Amino acid sequence: MISADMEGATGVTWTGDVVPGTEQWQRFRRLFTADVNACVTGLVAGGAEQVLVNEAHSSQRNLLLEDLHDAARLLTGRHKPLSMMQGVDSDVDGVVFLGYHTAAGTRGVLAHTYMENSITGVWLDGVLASEGRLNAALAAEHGVPVLLVTGDDLTCADAATYAASAWTVAVKECVSRYAAVCLPPAVTSSQITAASTAAMASAGRAEAVVAPHRIEVEFDASHLAEAAAIVPTVELVGVQRVGFDATSMTAAMKAFKVVTHIAGAAMEDVYG
Ligand SMILES: [Zn+2]
Image (tube, rainbow, N blue to C red; front, side):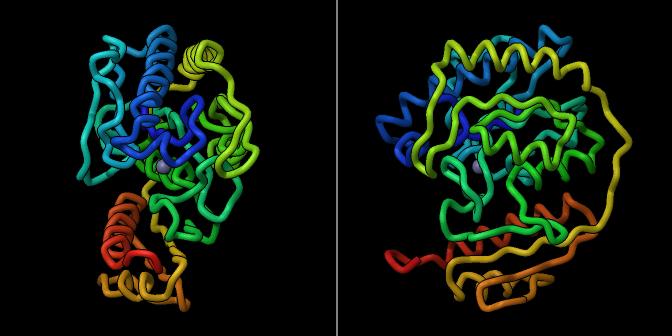
């Protein structure tokens, strides 16, 4: 399975590159699809019989089906219970985090955690967590290893802290949240293919480990935390911060999804 986000795709550094409907987004959809295809090529060369690609960015309608590698199936569109990780609970032997990015509250190209700019940090069991860290914990709960992570160099460094045995490919070097030294697609494609092939050596389900988890979320304004704290089980733990406990990572991520939706609905123009 490939969980495909867009901020960490080849060449992407800017809001317009990843916001659906813009001219730049139309351009970067092709580069994003090329990254995915390079990964599918490598996974198949490494022995994968089927590859499910789950769209994980924004509207979750970014990849070009008409250009997709014919060994892949595309799960496109939004409103999926497991969101970025929909499909991990099916018969999956490994997951690739493609086009991922660093966490809110850290450096990195287009760094954020789920909400683009209103969440200032998310903590999983007390550790500042990127989407990669959250999703790796969810994968572990289903016994699914993280095979490969692609994104900027800081995303790769982050991956080493939550999935030490995963391969990484840095398609760009972060200069600022909106700037990077980028490798061209011809180079990143071959690197992604080679890493995907090698990473397949680690494919295969491990023992599923289901455990309770705590997530805390900090926002950039108090009313967003107060709105989220209306959700049963979610408590206000600071002026701009909420926390909740869950009996499993799957339940924790579903509760997190509710928290981000409620906070998103409470955002106002200009002041947020
Ligand atoms: Zn993301």
